[in-house]
Image (cartoon, rainbow, N blue to C red; front, side):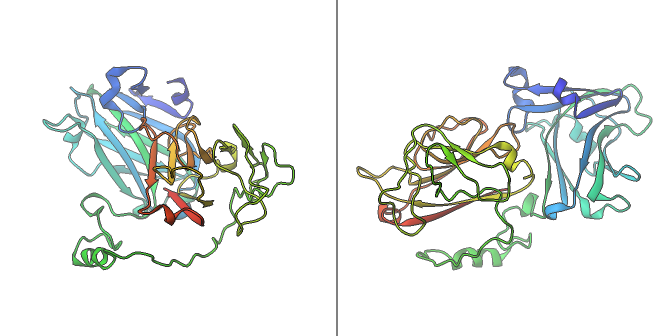
Length: 357
């Protein structure tokens, strides 16, 4: 809670606290994702505001999303709203749905989604957001008291939501064109995709062509201090490496590469990780030839690259794995690829890419 109050303040009858379901099992149902949420106690007109200085127009951002749910026996207020300001001007947006969403439903867990279209906001410079406030009460809330829990407050680029989230063609309309698009690719194999270089220079780029080998890996990207450190056993394929990508490479048996978290600290939305990997083994092929894995702690084995990238949980990292522990853990996410034939991987360079938004 102390850390929470360094970012959020309280006004009126507000009293905020950190709901941690790991530290207190009574909060199990009051956290939407991860392990923590913000508990917002209100008494009459109450609000909590975030100490912020941010650009909400960058990277194509056009939407704000909040997730909230009431306490089990909550009493609704007469207004739920958010206020967004730039230090000079501000605008207040009321919750557009039924205020009974501030009370527990007969069925369900009570979590509600509030999507806000930022493009309709006028008079506020979203390039310089200085105020983001959540509040209840319209000035005459009286002595109504209650508890709401907020989690997963996020900014988004345009996307299909609600009943249109399964749209395929991108027009947010589920129709026969989506079915046609899906069917047109059914059964196809061996597609050739022509790659093109990204327009922006990478923050981190490891070519593994370092002269001194050892545990240090030089970053050739744009970040000035992104040099990596090889952890565990250092195995360099510098004698007879596969041809095609330089004169040497890193063998990914027990050699994860740790990347400084600060080097990717500027990433606030989506990012992409790409890697070239050569499939080669002397015994049986691994069950999973390649795994795109994000984890909360650098503990898994057989990592090729481990990036300290924030994805919503403090200290969370993104990894690209060949093999490793597939046991699911809370807050961890992985995508495993099992090819139909080992020859799809073995004896050739394979290009892998993962995008996290």
